[in-house]
Image (cartoon, rainbow, N blue to C red; front, side):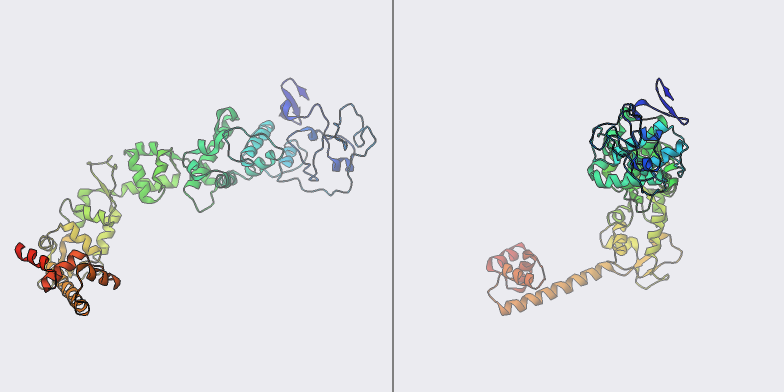
Length: 473
C-alpha cells in the first residue's frame, strides 16, 4: 500500500527511497520457476536473491531499463527470455535479504536480537550505515553507499553484541593507526560518530556503546574474546570512579597503572572508561592501601626509611591517593607484607654471638636503615639471624659489615697491585694509561686515576707524581 510518507508492505513500513518505483526489478532464477512479480524484488537494499544467490536485475540484456508498462514478466519487449531455469534453491537464513523477507512473512530466518525490535526501514538504514563503516577505509567524511554494504552491516549485527564488537575490533586493527585509537572513539571511528548520521536514540546508544567497548578492548589488547555480558555490563568513567572513591583522577590512574589495566600513561589524557571487572579490581585495591605510617609499623622501620626500598623497586609508592585518612603517599598492604615475608624467608630465628642490630650496623656503615634493608633485600649484605620477639625488620642481626667491606676492598686492591706489578715486570716503561689499556684488554676496567694511585704507592709512578704525593702528605 502506497502512503504519503512511504510504502506499507506486509505490515512493515518502508520509505519511498528504499523502494524501486520507476523501474521493475526481477530475479531470473525466480522467473525460471514461475513467471510472476515478487514485491520484495523492489526493495532496493536487496541486491541478491536469498533463495538462489543470483543478482536482482533492473535492466534488460541490452542494458535498457525494464519499465512498468510492459505487461509480461518473463519476456522482454524484444522477445528475450528473462528467466533462468535449473538453479537450485538454497536456505535463505543468515543473509540480509533472508532476514528482510522473514520480517515480511515470506520465509524463516534465525532471530537477530539487536534488530528484531526495530522497524524494517530502520533495520535497512542501520545495516547500510554500519556496512559503510566496516566496508570502507577510515574516513572523516561519509563514504558512498555500495550494494554490498547492507549485507556487511547485517553480518556484523545479526549474531549479537559480542560479534558486533569483534567486527569493530577487526576494523580498528586493519584501518586505524594506533595513535588515532589512543585519542578516543570519535577520532578512531570518524564520520559515524557525527550526530547527523545517528538513527534512533536506541541505535545511537547501541553503536556508541559497542564502539567504545571495542576501542577499549583493542587499546588494552584484551586477549580473550568479548562476550555479550561484556557488552551489557555498565562501564564507569575515570572521573566518576574517582569521585566515588573520594580520590583525585590521577590517583585512579596510578592504581590502574599498578594493576596493569591501562599501562599507557598517554591514554589517561583522553576519556577513560573501566568495565565492571576493572572497576571492582580498583575498588578492592584501594581497600588494601595503607599510609606511610602504617607501612612503617608493619616493617618495624623508623619514619622516613621507605624511600630506598621504593628506589630499589621493592615497594611501589602511590601518590594522589589521599582521599581517605591523612595526607601523604600510600602503599599496598599486600606488597608490604609480602616484602617482609620474603625478607624473613631464609633467615633463621635466634641469636648469634658478635651480631649487631640493624640500627647499629647502619650507623657503622654511615647509611640509613632503609638503605641497609635495600642492600640486604638485593643480596648485597646477608643478615645472620632474626631476634625472637622483635617487631618487623628491627629484629635483623648482622655481622660487622663495615669490616667485611673494608677487608673485601683491601683484598681487591692487593690483587690489582699484584697484577700491575706483573705488567710492570713485563713492560717496565708503561705509565698509568698504558696499564689502563692492558687491563682493559683483559676485561678488567679500572680507571686511570686508580692505577696512578697504586703506581705511586708501589714506587712505579712518574717522578712528578711521586713528588706531588709526598707534598700532599
